[in-house]
Length: 427
Image (cartoon, rainbow, N blue to C red; front, side, top):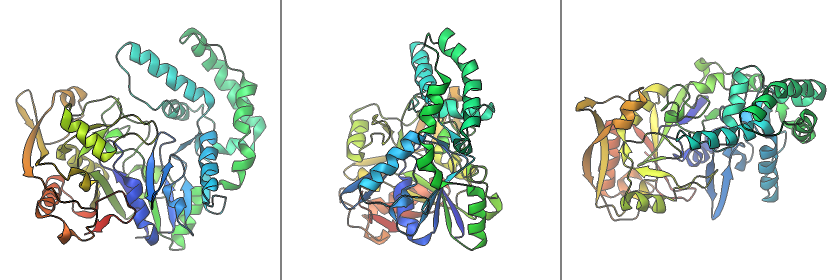
């Protein structure tokens, strides 16, 4: 496994961090290639719970290097907050095991302000996207508009101040005349960001050069995706998406490593479906059964604490995600949450206006009108926590996994059966 990418197959929150944590013994470097502090990855070590937003969860393992690559947008204050929290719990984080790309974009204070103001304005018109309010979208907007601030600018204060002043010359007019806010002081904004520079300096590096040299030295890399395929800016349920490429292809552009060098893609998929924020969700359960899944699965956002919308497994969406990222295998998480359900449903197709669809459509109005076509399978009552081999699962659970493989178009190689770090079956 010289280089593998792990990506989500649904709307995020699939449990990618748990799978990555289990694979860390087989790798040398973990690379976060997109997204920002809007991501939430949770790992349990014994009874200890660790929540990550920017720092790759591989940091919990000794002798591993974690990289925040160029495709990410980085909030310096949030990053230092995470580092400090890890230090307090005895986890080593410094320039030797955390590398921050000098080409990554910085989430500026005004990005967070605009994000929150924009969402508030959209909410008033009933068109709220459901962002985390952490400035991710506006930071990516500035990146594409070529008015962003990069991590390398932290090392050149004079240039950073010029860039901030130029950006605020335009943005202050928007804040005043669109949102009715007071203009921001360029010096105060620059000072706030530069306050992080000295502490982050030891971590800042040309990570593309570092990663390619590591591959040349036959180091094993794992690229860690945030969010999920259906939140991808190009391939997701646009406009209810994130602002980066969260599919496997994003690993190459988001890291500076050629796609020819990334040999394996692993898709992580939950045994049912969840979604946070607004947007269409064909298999959503708006009843007591959906609430029961939420409570048993602890389906509340790691980053925001928002309750996740829950529903049955959507094989139409997962087939599409498997195709878009070209995954070689799946890791199926939270199978244990389904224990106790008398019957389980799997959506194999949609119907829209009487027409059958077996492929996930680009037209959002079709997804909004889609009615799921379900196949019903028997459930099981046995707990799965102690299962460590596929043969130890109840017969109904085995049949459910095999049916998901058939419907999804990819084999299941890992099965999550509990929150514990070792609660994982390798098939």
